[in-house]
Length: 120
Length: 109
Image (cartoon, rainbow over all chains, first blue to last red; front, side, top):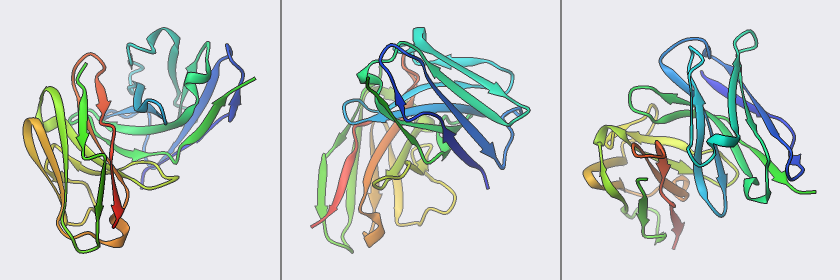
């Protein structure tokens, strides 16, 4: 059974960098066939795709966030991470990591989500 | 950007009734790339349907998806108590790659 678990600070100050890690079990981030993705959900903007990393290190980001987003992977720990720089209150959301099919682009497995609040 | 509009915003029904949820796209979407999710309070979305009409693993057959082009439908044939939740459609394509609808809440009447 594939499981994903987000971890990281729940409170980030404005203008700082949000950093989250997703730990994967039951699958490997270094095997092909799936994108390892980040999605966020806020009351104002609903569900928003942030980006993904593929097993070969290729990344793809939402154009609206691209200038501030970096997704990376640590295959030795079977984890992938999200960094979002220069955050504002608009980045307050529940952040999810998920596994996405490369064939049909659906999100089959999700982490439980972690709330990140941007506030001083 | 492909915008998905879900209707109605809220559906008030009783257990045992049929629920019909709509997802309309601003541009044509490949049926292969349309999915539906269920979300309950405090939980992550759960994949129900992919490829517009294929049920995900473990999803009961009272859930069905249909549609093509710009109009897609999720049908719950007979509502069970655990089906009262928010439902989202999601598509792949366009400038933002993956986008989601705003959701339909199915509430107990």
